[in-house]
Structure formats: C-alpha cells, structure tokens
Image 1: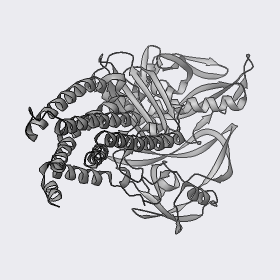
Image 2: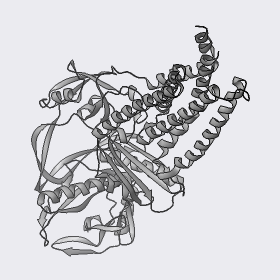
Image 3: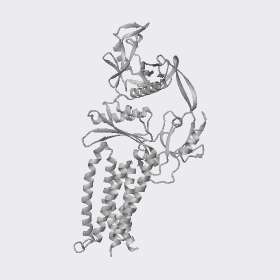
Length: 568
C-alpha cells in the first residue's frame, strides 16, 4: 500500500495518466454507437431537398450525423436501410430521424430519358447573377431543344451514401476504409500559388462531376518535385483519372482570335435533358470502320465580355451560302488541351451580334449504337465540367493509382489488431521468462498499451488518417519502446553495483542510451516525411510521435514504476 501511494504521487506517473485520459477523450470510444453515419448527400436528391447536408472533411467521425430511424423503425445496418428504400413507392413521404434532427422526405420518381431525332420549343428557366443588384434572378427563355421521352422506371435513389456508425474518432485511411487513390504531378515546375489553384480546381471538378467524399492534398519528394494526392473514399472511380490528368484548357476561336475560354467566360452550362444530350439533327450513324458515331449538343451562356469578343471577331466576315443556309466565312473552332475537337459553322445572323447563348457539340464512338451514345454523353459530361471549372495552369501526369476494396480494408483492421495483441503478449511472455518478475513484465505491458493509446489519441485530435503505413509506424515506435524498457530494467536490476551505487546513476546511464537511440531514429524518419510523394508521411509521423511520447512520457513513468517496486 505504501508503494502504491508513492506511485500515484509520482509526477512522471501522473503525467502518463493525464496523457492517457486526454487520449481517451480525443478518441471518444463508443462501442455501443448505433445507426448509419452519413458519408455524402447527392445534390438535388430527396435527402438534399429535405435539408440533410454532407459532412465536411474536417468533421470528426463521432460528430458525423447518423441515421437512427426511418418511419420510427430502427436502422442498425445497411441491410435495414436498403430493405426500406428498395420498397418505396413513387412520391411516398417518410421521415428520417438522425442524431441532429428529423427530416421529411419524398420518394422522387426516376425516369429513363430517350432522345428522339426531333426538336421542339421548350421554356428553359435558369438563374443568372446580376452584378448591379448583387442578386440572383430567374430568366425564362424559349429555345429549340432536342425532343425526348420520359419513361418512369421506379424510385430514384434518395441520395444518401452511408456506412456503419464509427465507434471512435480515429480516422481510417484509404487502405482501411477502401476507395481509390490517384497521385498526380505537374509536367512542369509550378509556383506555390499555381499549385494551390490546381488543388482548388481539382476539388471543384470532382464536386461538379458528382464526387464529394474526397481528399485532395499536396505532397513533395526529396528532389523537390510537387505531387497532388487525390483520395476518394468508399468506392473505385476509374472514370475520374482522365478528368484529373488533363489540363482541361478549353478555347473557342474564330481564326486566330480566342473569343471565349472555359471558366469565367462561361456563365451557364446546361446539363439537363431539356437542353443537352444527343444532337437530334445528327443523331447516331455507322461509320466506315463498322463502328458507330454519335453527336452530342448542349447550350451555354457567355459573359457579356466574351459575347462582345465574338461580335468583334465576326463583324468583318463575309456571308456565304451553303445548302441554302447563310453562314459566315469562318467557323468557330473548339480546342481542348490545344487539340481541335470540333468545328461549328456560324450562322449569318450572328455577324457582329454579341449573342450570349450558343450551342456546343462533340461526339463519341463505340462498337454499337448504345456504346457510342454512352461514350458521347460521357465526353459531354467531361466537357461540361471543364467549361464550368476552367482550365488548369499546367498539364498533370498520373504517377500512380491504387484501388482498395472496403472489404479488404476491414480485413486489414482485423489482422492488424490481432497481430498487435499477439505481439504484446509475446513480448510480455519473453520479458517474464527473462526476469521472472511480474513487477517488470506487467509495467511493460501497461507502457506498450499506453503508447498505442496516446498515439491514436493524438492522431484523432489532429485529424490524421490511420493507414497501413501509420500502423507500421506505431509498431516500430512500440518496438523501440520495448528495447528502451529492457535497457532501463537491465541498468536498474543488473548494473554493476560497485560502479552505479545509486538509482540516479543507473537511470542516467539508461536514459543516455535511450536518448541516443531516439535521436538516431528521429533523424532517420525525417527524410521519409518527404519521400515517396508523401505516401510514407503516415509512417514517419506516427514513428516520430511514438518515440517522442515514449522518451518524454511513458519511459520515464516506466522507470519510476520499476524504481518504486524493486527497491528493497
């Protein structure tokens, strides 16, 4: 009892206990957490209309909104959720109870859109920002659009991407949660300002393209090369590789004059079936190679400045007659990444006329008509995205891609936990066989466990993702900690008493060895912080955190415990 009182009054032990408590608070473990956490809410879906919002990337896992009930029925698994939504009827209303609120949703209908080789007049309403009044106003126009038919095929997805409720605030990296990673590098040297712009542009492109649960971050290597790492959690997105790598520089030229570019020159891009899709005037046709070719068309709105440039570029052009139609002598040339992708004839009525509404077209090919239509619509979506977001300052090159299955990630976690427990028990058994004293082996187990808890607590606090590299770093840190604890035990128990008569001298020698090993490991980890395009940063960070926590917190506490319980 006397030794126990002395132990809990020791400042080094008190410091260890404080760190452990703060780490547990940061981790916020709750093994009884129920429901499904919201990963993402699709735009214009039933959930989005009802007011449910996607969590921000910085939201701690335990603070994410969770679905608890649907129509007062508990939702504890993805099976419960899909059993309900798969049996919804069109326009049926239902309520979703979450950890933050109760929402009323309506099951929206889903239609199959079939484009016809006909056109018709439709009223199109769009929002336009008025710089004079600083307000957004609705403008309704009657335009000629491709005619289409809508066939009801069921209930649209309500727009929620969910995953089992997290039990802690520990963020799982891509290796553990599943998803895809794309590593890009600029093809030429860029400034920090350009690099920041590229990252923001990529984020906007992915959001426009329909992806939201993403992480885009910069990285560099020891040679000073810049990289951009894009991680998309929860699913494989092969189709975004081309979107990310291309510079996306879109230009429309008349002769040598650029009349507008993608980005700020484009005030509106139509993406609805009313004014975008397969071009009804051209449709699809079989080409000489036996493949099919389809044309797409969609309308855009230009800024007044771009419209004026178009008027200036056309005012001196001649009018020519072709196939009983009046055209201007020059065509509108569309360039994507400096390659000519289309050439549009300009109607004579546009001569010198600053028109803000124009039509963009392009094509797609495939072995069948259906495949050609899918390729054309995919190309249209990509072009629409680039027109909205603008071009990147430089071209990007894909360096590496990784795809991880969520199921495989779960297996990684189970195996890592199992190996960790086995390693701790094996070390404890070895130490007990060596010293034959529980007062040595039990404090070692406590110290190893404490180090792991504190490392995970700091990671949860700063929002660092734990991936396989980080787990390897934790194992390395704990392994070096065991070495240091053995040094402390040997110096205090088996030191030459004639030379080291006091505990102070014994611990001083032990900690001299420990500090030398600490500094050596620290210097070795610093280059890994930048090596491998930043992919080894998790390993370096957790190793540095682990050995620092060990040297300044856990190992002094271990030395105090050994000193108190082994004194005669």
